[in-house]
Structures are given as C-alpha cells and as structure tokens.
Amino acid sequence: MEVAGRRSERSAETEQALKDAARRLFAERGYLNIKITDITAAAGRAAGSFYNHFASKEELLQALLKDVGADGDVSAGAAEHKADFTDPEAVRYHVANYWHFARRNWPVMRAVYQAGLVNDEFARVAAQWGAEQREEVADHLDGFAPAGLRLPGAPDVSLAMTFQMIWGLLQVVQEGGLSLADDEAIDSLTRFAYRGLTGRDLP
Image (cartoon, one colour):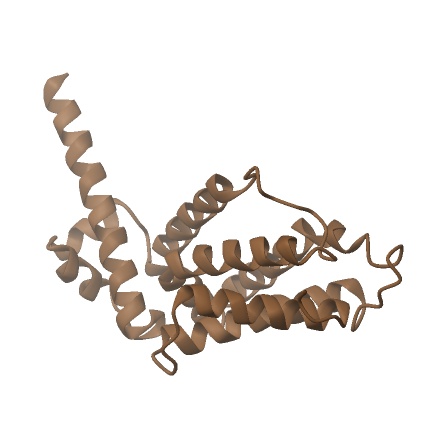
C-alpha cells in the first residue's frame, strides 16, 4: 500500500511538472511553437512519460484550462462585489478582478486563443469562454435604463467591447510592447470602460 502511495505521489508530481513546464514554454514561445518533447525536456522528464498523463498537447491544454476555471471559481463572490456598472466602483472591481485573473493565467489563455487559430474545437472553447464571461455580468447593465443612461451598443456588444479592451491592453503589456504597472492599467481601464459604458467621466 505504501509503495502504491509513493507511485501515485510521483505520478502526480510528474503531471504537475509537465503542466508547469508547459505554462512556462507557452508564455515564452507560444503554444504553436512548442512540441511535446520541449515540454518533457523543460520538466526534466523522459519523453515517453508525457503519454502516461496526456494523450496529446491539446489534452494537456484542456487540463490547464480546467485549472484556470478552478482559479476563476476561487476568485468569484468576494464581499466587495457590486453588480451595477452605473457605479464606478463596480466597474473598477470587475476590471481589477479580470486583469489580475488574466495576468495569472496568461500563458493558458494565450495558448487557448493561439490553438483556436488551427483547431476548431479550441476556437469554440475560446468563443464559449468569452460568452460565459459576458453572461456572468449581463445583469450588471440592468440599472442603465432606469438611470437614464444609454449603452454604446446592445448589452452583449457593449460587454464584448469592454472585455476586448481589457484583453487588448493586457496583450500589449504581456508581449512587452508597453511597460505598465497593474494599478495604472486598472485605473486607466476603469476610466475608459466607465466612460465608454455610461458616457460619464469618473467623479
């Protein structure tokens, strides 16, 4: 029983080492430029060990995506959460939450979008991911009409533009095209998003 336990522990360690190596390599060189042998070498494991855990690079990415989903579940439901985007503090909270989440998980999120360029399944995953993000905050726009505010487009369009704005800036920062501290990025994005959604400047 003790031997089986050690074997299971070593297996778990190898799986985690492969995941960690993949994240590092995806961040450094991009998903499309990485081979399975690159991952095993970076993990310090034999090439054949990969297939004891994953059938393909795509399956490894799916496993990493599940880890990202678990991270999102942990960061949801904080006490300071406000569900009304007419309130600038609610906009700031969601901008900051998404910014930090995406930065933590950038290698995987970037890999999913890159994989979607050559793999229809991952293209659908990326599209569904975006749709779920918008659906989670769709009711945050319910207060606009009662407040006499007009969105820049249909609610889903307005949210899609907001998420793409955050993603676009993060991509520039992560790829080294712009040096920007997190607080400065969040402040700028909050002002931009609040003005874009409400037509108002921050108080």
